[in-house]
Length: 431
View 1: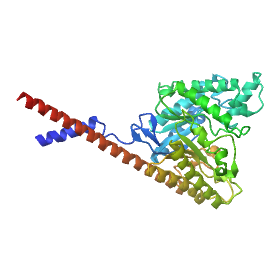
View 2: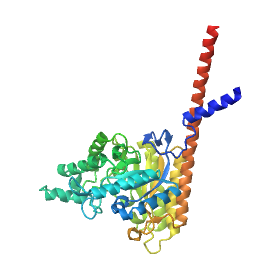
View 3: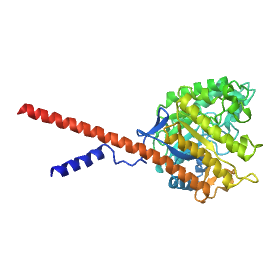
């Protein structure tokens, strides 16, 4: 009887301590701890995807099945982070039709995307504005300011004009304080949202010194964090270096950003990198592009680890199959290069915590195909690579979970043992 009592106590203990909870439980806010992302106290490594179109498509209720289908397929293939747009400024199906004026139907589309992600255990990175004209972007903001009598010289005034910055701050506040019409949970209180992104691929070519964007990130990061202390924040950078490491950039690009300085700003929780050697080095051979990518990925991992001391996510990468002569095998090699670097770093406790390929599509979305789109239900060698990376990163998470559970059990055993000795001493004293 005594032996069975001990067994029962042990089972009760591990249940109460949560030791038998599955690793896949995704019900908390993702945080950072040193070089790692952490979810529910366990290091969080995850494979993911981009699907910029979630809100746009979900604005039409008859098309929402595409979001559900995409998330279902993503879950089947072990994908657990999605990056998407929380902006659509002016134009067709706008979220923000004019400064401070929001389309409730479009907001409900974003509500649906968030609620579906929650159902499928997928974390979201939500980007707040675009660098490019697609879905409005910086150009729409400065056009709005110009129409109100502001003296605007270029789209780069987005970063400095006080009226434009007020427009953008208002958008941050409006999105973060939104209450989801389907779940009843405020966005800033929703753990399904993993992180906010200040801008998709910010650039300011009029100031290659980087001072303009540095000041803007500092200001907006502080403002966003004053509203929402629950979520992580990243800039949305492509990874281009400033003048000190200009030689690392493709064709010595200078776009007014600095991977090191921008990510050292207080309030920026993790770094991001985008990787498009087929676009950046379009005149180079495929082998040169792969060689560049290998150096690009590994150098950023080392800098995140040794200089920034923050996690890093490869937030966009892929290869278009639209160009003549481009093959699936070539795309697979790009994926393998990125995935191998991430896994190697993660396995050794390094700074790389995941990658998000561009882009995931559901069946029946041919009009969204930009050459990079991948439909997971259409089996391919690339889809197999995606699944394999998901499995490898999940094994790392499970390893950390087991170690944590062992430590929890040891601590509980030590507490129980101390209580037992304390009780015996009381009895001895009483005798």
